[in-house]
Length: 455
Ligand SMILES: Cc1ncc(COP(=O)(O)O)c(C=O)c1O
Image (cartoon, rainbow, N blue to C red):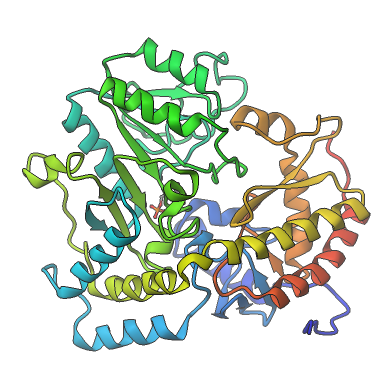
């Protein structure tokens, strides 16, 4: 049963606007993470969430597909997790020492991911990426990390190289430039990277051969979710594994988004490959500041020996561990039904959005495996077909049109990630998808009536 409230006007955001203005007087630029400023017409302020439902301070209700940038894989405020955190808070919020919970969480990760012979915990995936790169350099005695254009590995100096290369500076197809989107980065950091194009195994071979003997690791998002949503072509993962084995490089799977979403054994189980190191974030902590580095015993050796420093006051924080243990138990309880259950819901939403796009003449082509997907909107005259890599996305996706559509959807109570990604959680139900599509129809209608193509 669709619970559509009878509102004649799209949502308005007066209280969020007032709070944002107030925030700009005490918080730098009014937000605590740069991309939150992307939300139009104003960065929203939220009051509460439950399952797939979210309410802002103006009383607007959303069917949420932003889901805390995908971290809320178990929905908003699941009661079991709240109880687990509250119970732990009464015992202690932080010890900076050992507790049995950390072993219980580590054992769960180990049981689910075959390549996770050992783990270490951190508070963000950005930190875990830093640890993985350091470990790879120490393991091989080599300086370079090979990463792919458009892939995001956290906001530190190292994670952002080659992430958002502007088209006029990105270099030729064979030699993607190592650029950085931020000022203030240590210049020498850029020299420690080789950037390659995603989804071209033969190009990758040539790129590795060009720097052979100097590359410590190849890092990647298994399904690229930070630029469009681009699954690996057949043969890409096996090529990475083969090259890593041939040259003694480490294969680093950054599963911050795909981890546990793509199944209990993550994207590495879904696509069938075995990395040396895995970065886990988001779903591993269910929306608490928790992340993990997992790896084979051989790849983790320099942490075992103490030659690589890995530290953090809040590592293995018991509140996060309580949330993580509860979260991982949800995944374990799904057994073989995961990830097919949420994939079906995602496919239903993708198909429904695709139908609406057709009906209203919007060239939107939802792309992705359903567990997560991206709303690609083709630029006028752009050819059809799946987006294949970062350059293809920049050339064909109409970002301005998406932002207009996103705002129309938001004003009707359907919320996607600002850059165009949609995530499904274990809390979404078929009726949430149906309700979202009823609301989205009005959003598409208004978008089609008000969108003015950019010159
Ligand atoms: C693939 C990937 N790696 C690393 C990160 C960094 O995670 P965090 O924001 O927890 O530092 C993200 C964040 O979105 C991510 O998507």
